Amino acid sequence: MKLFSPLAAGALISIGLGGFAIAHDEKQAPIPFEGGTLTITENADQEKIVAFDGKELARNYVAYFDKIVDLAGVKVALFDVGDGGNACGPAAVLVWKPQDGDIQSTTVGAGDCGAPPAAVTQNNFFFVPYPLPGETLPVKMWAPDTGLQVHGDLTYAPLPGTTWTDLDPQQFVDGIIGAFRNEALYKTARELLGSEMANFATSLKVNGGTEKTPSGIFYARGCIPHACGTYDGFMAVDPKAKKLYFAQQSDQPEPKAWPALGEWPAEIRDTMNSALTAQQ
Image (cartoon, rainbow, N blue to C red; front, top):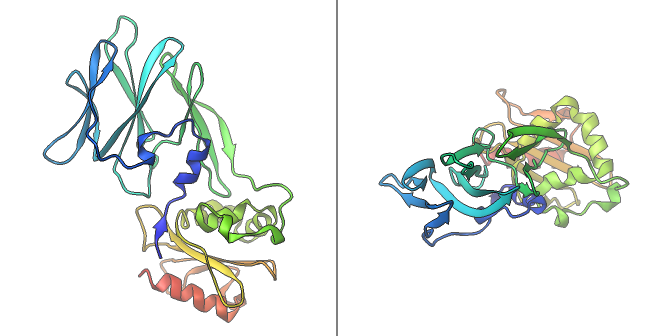
């Protein structure tokens, strides 16, 4: 079962996520910028170094040039720089040259598993996050004169009016987490998980394709980015009975479960045990 990240779904709200979304095998040509040249070179340790006229601005194992935009008369170059892999996205490196000043750069998202997709307006970059179920995340904006600021909060919400009969696993582009967009399912999940909803959803963030049992119950297992094999999650949905089953590996022999394992049908419990045991 191949694991994948839901980050691709977040790109749907981006105005140009840039080079990280596609494969880049060609060497980046020098980029003319504000009277100088931006470059991406590789050192002996296979690190990619972003520089302006030889002055290093950022480095990591993956670095792609995205684009140059004009924010209220100030040109800003945007790079995607990160560790690589599919669990966390890249950080955003912004490069600009103030009037009568030296070249400047700043990094957004280096400590947050990458930067959210960047939307561009006439005066600002807006970094729009992709909240998990039960999660509220800040929307940040950046401009050369004000720096990085919090613009507001974005809270996950299901699609109003959706019911159990609307559930279709084939439409979950980001894996079984997509089921939480169903309002009826979301309300049931919130009753079961309470304040642990966001923490549990994290255990499905890197998740496998949704599968079905012979009786029509669909399920999937997943894991925390960069920590697969520890605190992995399992989710099963019984649309006919309108019931949910969640489990997560713990420090105890048995996983944490919502509802308690004693309330699980044997078919779902056996499926969960097989799914989580297979990753140990």
